[in-house]
Image (cartoon, rainbow, N blue to C red; front, side):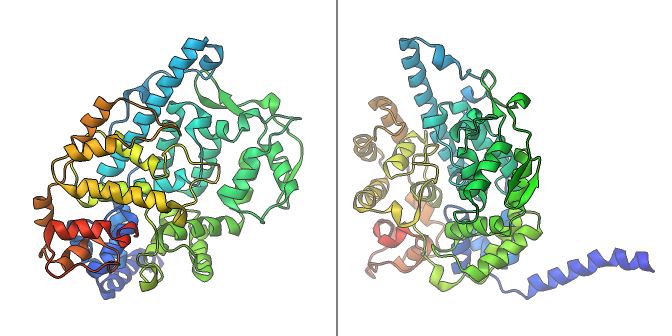
Length: 489
């Protein structure tokens, strides 16, 4: 009898969950659009209609079931070439160094364009949104790492664990060669500890300011001594002779700890789960986290063993996520604006290089955050210069379906500096000439072409400047994408 009861438990739980899902109301168009605009770069009319019939729980089941661990877009060929030794630049002649610098800049541009293309085309935009989220949490920059191959490997790591286990991701990112270089852990050795990584792993990756002490940093730095890079292969290496094997005390825990032990101590702190949930809240809900909701979701996150999907499920099924006051409460990042527009309106694109330039011009140069804290986001995305540039980009995309005027206008605004280089007029114009918007095909998805129907498909809230009643179709669309609310999600 006892065995039969145990066998019945999964069935009873399944029936109860099915009944709960059945009792929940469907999302409806507005909630479905809200969910997709926050989790998928853009809420296309077809996806919105499909998700509108699902409950919150069913919608999350569908979103999480489609996540991936690998990109679908083939990366640049050089990513799989033999690794270029980190020693090469130091031993090169002056001319060779210049050639290497040009090569690295070119590869860096290709890498940016490739990632934007993956965001544009992926069947799992939530995966790419989370990879971008972790890129701005576990920050590193190709300007210091100086190896596009290592930056690509880190990007693949972030995608692989984007919706996996945070503890596993933390341990792996600590060993990631690009991170080891960026936070100077390669120079951390017994007797001369470098505290940079130990400080940032506490302040930025896990606990946040005010939840550790300077002695904690010093002790943790000793635990990470001996961690380094094998320069000819670009792989992590632990050098036993450079490791401080002495007794350490970190956050009240004592022992003969190594780096992994310290990471486990940090994961054992309730504050770590709260920090990650706060950042997820700012990314997906509103600029000001709700303390009670953060604690509730953080408990679920910790109890799951730091499964990222558990935190996202709790967040995206909460009443707070769907609260009216949080609609149109977040400003789209440059990447979200660009990728979201391309996905929302199903633009045909060739190379994504022009949009890599545009994202950098608007303040988000992929693989090159401004500092170790990453892009601050929020209102920092918008100023008089970037707002004008955002609106000009959208105006040109929707001005007309012949791409030549768009190409000519955008070609004159290529940014320089910050890792961006002049790739030549011909190359950029060829790429821009492939950008097309088929308005007839897009409007065919809508049940009506009146201004209100177009508005509901495009904006997260009512427009700041109402559309005149006699304006329809493409004219209405142009006005809506110029409206301030289009900059919000």
